[in-house]
Every structure is written in structure tokens, then in C-alpha cells.
Image 1: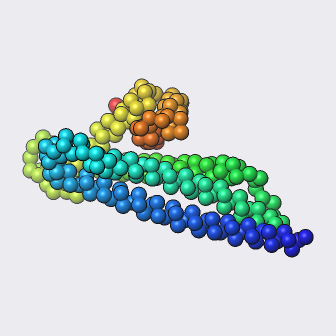
Image 2: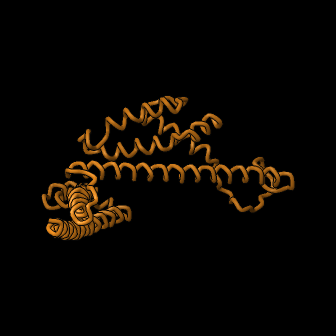
Image 3: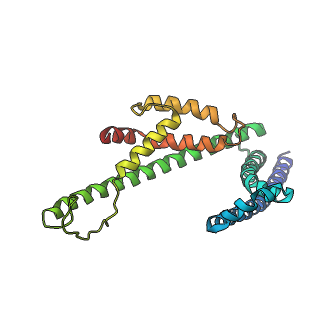
Length: 264
């Protein structure tokens, strides 16, 4: 009986391995095609930026009325979006099926209890893993952006201090006098201006006041994220808006809330 179980387990393991390879090959092919289409689209945009815009304005109506041209443009815009989503769906299906089979194969071969008893439970595990991965990536981006802002403000403060020192020695100052070269160049911009603009645009996107605290911001984010989540909102621009909402929420961190209060 144990021999039959192990044989069945090895059979399931072999099937899972074959399915995994098939999915990997298919995902690679789809990814390759999506990459080609994206590069073609980028090349088309580069052509427009190099002067093709005028040609498109002149010939635009004629081109759009041509069914083949219209289809190509539509394909270049829509296919990368659908293709990327399709790849994500394939990865989800692959994980759900193969992990189920590998776990149950391990159960028959080594007597190790399988984590779950159905495909859907493995699918739910995959979704949680992806959500955790997105959360970690979001945190990493937030920390990196915060580090960049800290560095920009630090450099600005050093620049300001250098100008105060130079103004006392006949060097460059904001009121005239001789110009003296320094490591910061002569076009350094106060990051407070850009920071304040981005902060207020992020608040506008989440529809909160500029003096909102972190609890108001979090509540507004949840409401907007739920409204524009791609799984719930089927409008064509839902994914784009959802990403913008996430970016705005990432920017409105506790440190940035405090920094905004200090520079107003």
C-alpha cells in the first residue's frame, strides 16, 4: 500500500513538474510578445516626439479612418495592458495548480501533510503572497523616496550655509556682488517648493485638507482605493487612478506630514 502511495505521489510530482514547465514557457512567450509590442509603442512615441506629431496632425483624420491603422493603434495601446494582466493571471493559475500537486505529492511520498485541500485555498495563499510583496515594495519605495527628500533638504541647507559664508568674503550672495563657483552650481532650487506642490496635489487626489492628520489621510485613502480598485471599478482608467492614489498615500507619510507643517 505504501509503495502504491509513493508511486502515486511520484506521478503527481511528475505531472506538476510538466505543468510548471508548460506554464513557464507560455508565460515567457506572452511576456516576449508583450515586450515587443511595448517597444514598438515606445518607438512610435519617439517618432512623434522627433517631429512626427505634425505629420500625424495633418494626416490624422485619414489615418484614423483607415480600419487597419486604427486597429494597429488600438492594439499598441490595449495589448500591453491586457497582456500584463494575462501574465499575472497565468502565474496565479500556475501557482494554484502546481503547489496543490507538489504538496499532495509530498504527502504521498514523505507523509508530510498538505497545507490545503483545494485549489482555491492555494489561490488565496498566492493572492496574500502577492499582496505582501506589493506591500513590501510599497514600503521600499516610500523609504527610498523619503531618503531622497532627506538628502535634497540636507544639500539645500548646506548650499544655503555656503552662500552665507561666501557673502562675507566678497563671493556670491543673493543681493549682488561677485560670483564664486561652488559644488552646488548656480541653478540649485529650494526643494521646499516642489515638496509643497507634491504634498498638496497628493492631498487633493485623496480629497483631504492640507492640514489633515494621518488618520484622516488613511481613512480617505481606504475610501478612494476601494472606489478605484481594478477588481471593483471596470472603467478603463481605474488602474491608472488606483496607482496614483497609492503613490499619493505613500507620499503622505508621517515624516512628510511633519515636514509640510514646518515649511508652510
